[in-house]
Amino acid sequence: MPWPIVNPATVRKVLRRIFLIVFVLPVILGMVYVYFVLNYVYSEGVRAGYLQKFSQKGWICKSYEGEIAMTTVPGVAPIIWNFSVWDEKVAAQLRNVPGKKVVLHYREYRHIPTDCFGETGYFVDSVTVAE
Image (cartoon, rainbow, N blue to C red; front, side, top):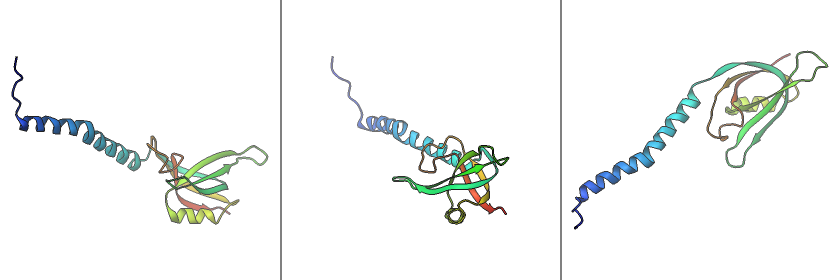
């Protein structure tokens, strides 16, 4: 039984569809997912405490990471809250106030696909030094 003759234009069309489904569609879906995750805030609020640590971390993707000790009553063990910072101006402010009481406004983003944006889901966008 002889093989059927295949039109080269039909083969190109089928290969193009396979390429779109296997390579292009996942890339587009991934871009839409990252856009959604980084642009829609899950929660936002304010936390106050004493800035204990603030540093820049990462091998390839550098991010600013810090922690504050939130205490309600003196003598009680503090709760440590970790956060990340995207903004260079906020990072510069935090570098100048270690050990001081700060009020941090933050936004929480859920399901960020990589640590390149920050190690935590909490991103501080403004700092106020408390008296």
